[in-house]
Length: 111
Image (cartoon, rainbow, N blue to C red; front, top):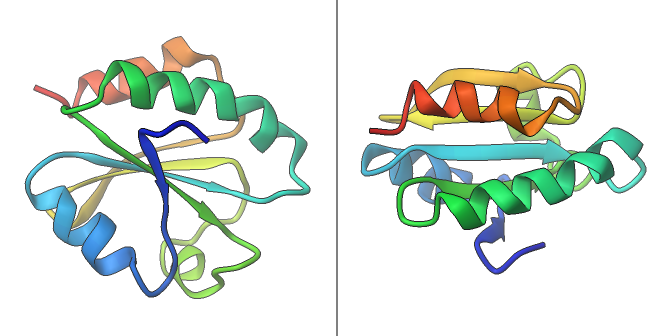
């Protein structure tokens, strides 16, 4: 994980994601250790966190270690990227998709 990405838990989700998204967009990467597509998406998520540092907060949540939050947001498949703004989910990307596709989604939410 790059130094621009923090791990969040069920306990820290409110402050690290929901509250933080009131000042800047937050992208949450829902993943698991055993998930091959999650591992292949990881360098892309790292690159986005580095490129957009200061404009976008990027965090990761391990769905095996945190059961409550993924359930609340109806995470059915991973990897899943959820973008939060103002304490709400404003967009999502599911699956190991190309970086350009994620960038297009992010452009809609980053000024």
